[in-house]
Image (cartoon, rainbow, N blue to C red):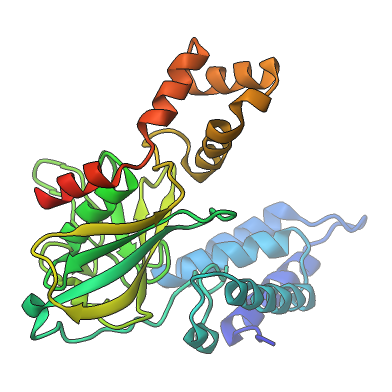
Length: 321
């Protein structure tokens, strides 16, 4: 079982003592006294500890004891590992470091970094790109890309094979939103152009094979931080050069992602609608149209049908990259 870190235990105890030392006679916490102590403590902490302090302050102010916190931490950590082991994107090595999604380590991950392939121009990477959070059936596309592609080019490939419109910010991480590794493009501060305010690697300057070069290597691609599309990009194979441009070879689930439509929740519902529209009640149909802003069934179904995958169309677009 995971144990509380030293700073977590000390901070929880200190804050708990602050609560207990400032209680009224009826046992209610003296929030004014506690807030004053918390404010003083915040002033003495380094910037990287202030977020941790704020979290612990919230727990303590709600009466959570260090023992209760430790019990929760252990249960959460254990269940997270079990959940990860059951998922398609679990790596056996993940058990050796904090699992993504861990509240207290903020999902920070060990990142495997390679020297880019010296013979990348003579190799082809076979990648499986799978939408995270969708199952029964899963949604994925298998593509082949030149092994000397950079991450900007891989981003463009993912947009094409998933049917997205490239209207939003994106990034590559070891695990979604873990800034231990954050591949993307920076904001242009002079003209306030779109971009990330922090990156570890520039997508145009970083070759895919620096992080994805052997079978089983994985990264996660996050697109649209509102709808929150997350795709697991996994190396299925590295072979001798077969292509001059990307090719989509296989797919599962014919409905593409739809930009600005509500993320995976809307995707899963829309996929069911395509298959079972005739079984829906009139009330359910009306609800769907209202949620997505359509006046008629035909307009809604026409949109969904226009986002069915066509390998010919996708590969024609990929050939022009």
